[in-house]
Every structure is written in structure tokens, then in C-alpha cells.
Image (tube, rainbow, N blue to C red; front, side):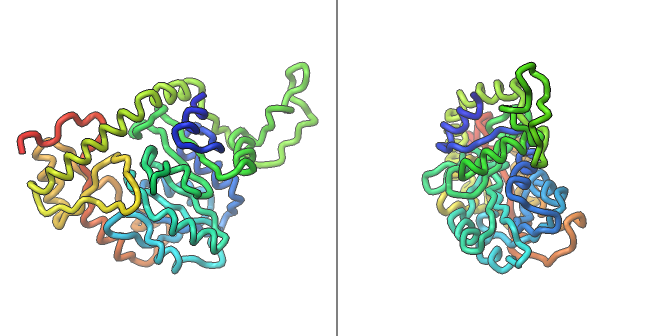
Length: 324
């Protein structure tokens, strides 16, 4: 029932829920046929929950640069990072702000490379009028952990482009088991049922699914409140300092946060915290971590990290600087 609700909301057909965001990525990696040593191109401006699963699977992450005004992958940098070993492009939509989906997807199609939209923070965001998860990308993964706009306490989802991928995902999500023939007429495990693919125990529990169903009932209302808060921030920040709202050319963010670029990041954070708003840089660029291997410095990433500040914009924020 929860999966059907997600399908209706996103306008997509081939979707699976999972026990965690990590298992959503793991099922996606296996369904893509990625092997240890394969390369995937990704943005280092992302949560470690978005990047570590690929390293854990034995894939080599090649960092591409980002657009310093959007925080998302720069298509031209992605093109330069492609090699004969590139099997995937991981397109993170930073803090709920959609990136250049058409451009990245076109690169993938032209080069025969699978594109995975990393929707860890962007559930409910739209791109050119379509929901993220229904934009023609090969695979999209979502997180439903406690700090997301839709939470199942813990959980995730995978959206596939076609039925074949979806059906493979069903097996991979459930230890490779075809439940239709796994047990015989006595309810015993059927020795004639072979397990032919590697898989995970990654199904979402009924309890988590029920929580998700209840969350869907008020999702539109909460999204609208966050977008109303964003409009208020756009007006108010002009009176506070020389801050530039994060750019989003073709999409409507879900405003998981309200992003701004500040000439003095630390001073900006301190200013808003003094006002009672817990401003934060949220993420640090993952290319500083040795676990991913030393790679070239990326100027767009560094410039963005040095200036990005997130302001609280959630549905639970009921007052935005009413005294200014």
C-alpha cells in the first residue's frame, strides 16, 4: 500500500521500498551489474550516506566538480571524468535542489553509462514540472530516515525506468528469492527453487510502511508550507546581509533547507544562530576523506563549500524573522 501511494505521488510505475537508504543503494548497485573496481562519477558535496555505499561495494568513486551557484554536478566536469572504466554517474540533488538532470542523463545515454539520481534529500522536489523520480533517469533512490520530509523512521525507495529492472530488484531486495515458487504446497522450502542472483534482506517492514502511509496524507501540505517559508526567507535575507539565494535553474526545490551563499560563512552562521535560527553548512566535501583515495582539488567544490549556508525552512518553522 505504501509503495502504491509513492507511485501515485511520483507518477511512476516501477518502484520498490527498502528497509534503509543504504539498502536502496545496494539493491540499485547490484541491479546495475556494477562490479568491484568499476568507476562511478559523483559529487563530493553530498552526505556520506550517499557516497560510502559505493565505496563499500568496492567501486571507485571519481569526484567531479560542481556548479558553485547550485551545489550540483557540473555536466562539463562529468564529461571530462569519464574513462573506459566508468559504469555509473551518481547525480546528487544537493539539499533538495534539483541539478541538471537532462544534461547529465544525456551524457549517460550518449556514453552508455547508467545514471542514478541520488534523491536522499529531494523527495517532493520537481524538475521541469516533473517529480524527481519521474524524469527519465535510469534509477532514482530516496531516503525516508527521520530527518526527511517523508519519514518511515527508517527506509528508502528505488525507482526504475522499466519493468525488467524492477523485477530484478524484487529478487535482489529479498535474498534472491522468487516468493511465488519458494515454498511448496505444504509451505516448506521448495528444493526445486534455485537462487540465481545475489541479494539482500532489504524489505521494508509493515510497521514502517504504515508510518509512511500516514506521512503521505499530509505530505502536500508540508511541502507547501516549506515553499511558503522559502518565499519568506527570500524577502528577509535582503535586509540581513549580502547573501545570495542558492540557484535552481529548472526545478522547484522541496526546501529541505533554504540555501544561501555568503561571503563570510562563519559570520553568517553566527548571525542567524544569534537570531535563533540554527544555520549550518550541513555537509562537508567528501573528497577530503582518505577512504575515497586522494584526488585532484576541485575549485567549484571548494568555492561552494566556503560559502554555502543552510537556513531552517521545514514545515515545522512557524515564524521567520517577523520583527524585520
